[in-house]
Amino acid sequence: MTEIGIGILGGGYMGKAHSVAMSSVGAVFNTALRPRLEMICASTPASAERYRAAYGFARATDDWQALVRDPAVEAIVIATPQEMHRPIAEAAFALGKPVFCEKPLGTGIEDSRAMLAAAEASGTIHMTGFNYVRTPATQYARQLIEDGVIGTVTGFRGQHTEDFLADPEAPASWRTSGKANGMMGDLAPHPINCALRLMGPIASVMAEIETVFDKRPGGTVTNDDHAHILCRFASGVLGSIYASRIATGRKMGYAYEITGTKGAIHFDGEDQNAIHLYRMAGPEAQRGFIKILTGPAHPDYEAFCQGPGHGTGYQDQIIIEARDFLRAIETKTNLWPTFRDGMEVNQIIAAAHASSDAKAWRDVSDF
Image (cartoon, rainbow, N blue to C red):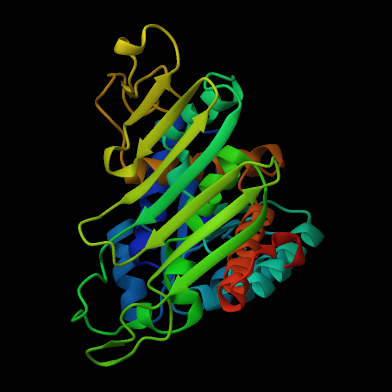
C-alpha cells in the first residue's frame, strides 16, 4: 500500500462527503493507494481550521493556490462553487496533479471545454463527480440493458425532482442567483448524465426551461426552477428528462424508466436499494414488475455489506467515486466519468437553454 496526499477545496456539504469518503475508501475497498488527508481549504482561516479538526486533515488554509502548490498534496478534490472550478483545475493540471471535480464542470460549456483542454494537455488523471449513477442498482440496470434482458430499447424517461424551493416564501439565496446556480446547473446534470450512461449519446433536444417564482423574500430570482427536455438519442430512440427544485413532496426524485421490446426497468432514488424489472414473458395474468433488492450479487455492494437487502446509502456512492479516482491514479488510466463526460453534459445543457430560448429543436453537436 502507498500513501497519497489528498487536498480538498471546500469543506461544506460535498467537502465533508469527500473527506469522509477519502477516510473510508481504503478500508472499504482495500485500495492500493491509501489517502492521507493532507490539507483542506475553505473561505476563511476559521472555517478551514474548523473543517480540519472535524474531518481529520493535517493542515488547513484559506488560500486555494497554497493548497494546490503544496508538494505534500498529490491529488486534488474540488468541491467549491462552480466559478472556482476552472482556475483551480488549470493550476493543478499545470503542476501535473490529478483532479476530481464536482459537477457541473465549471459555470458552463466554455469553462468545461477549457478544463478538458487543460486536463488532456497535462496528460494526468481527471474525473467528474456524478455519484447517483454509481448505486449498485443503477450499475445493475446498465448490465441488464447491455445483456439484452429488456430487448431493444425503445424509450427513456428520466427525472431529478426535489422540493427545497417549492415554497414560494422560501427566501432568496445564492441558489436563486446566477445561471450556474439554477436548477439546470444543480439538478439537471444528474439525469442527463444518467441518460448518457444508460442510453448513449444525445443527438438533439427540445426544451422548455422556466422560472416559476421570479421573486422571493429578499430578492429577485435570476435562474430557473424546472425544465422539460425532449431528447433524441444518437441511437434514434426518443426520450424525455424532467428536472425541478419545486416538485412539492419530492426529496430525492432521481428516477428513470427504460422500455424495451422484451421488458422494462424502473428505478426510484427514494428507494435506491431496489430495481424494478418487467419481463415480457409467461402468461399475461402473471406479468408485472418485480422488485429486486440489491445485495452482494450486484456491482460494488459487497464491499459495504454482506447482507442482501440491507442497503447502501448516499455516502457510499461518494466512496465508490473515491475508489475509482484512486484506481485511475494508480493505473495511470482515466476512468469514467472524465472531464470529457462532464463537458458533454454541459453541451446538452447549453443546447437545452438555446432550444428553450428559440422554442425549437437544437442539435447538441452545435454546442
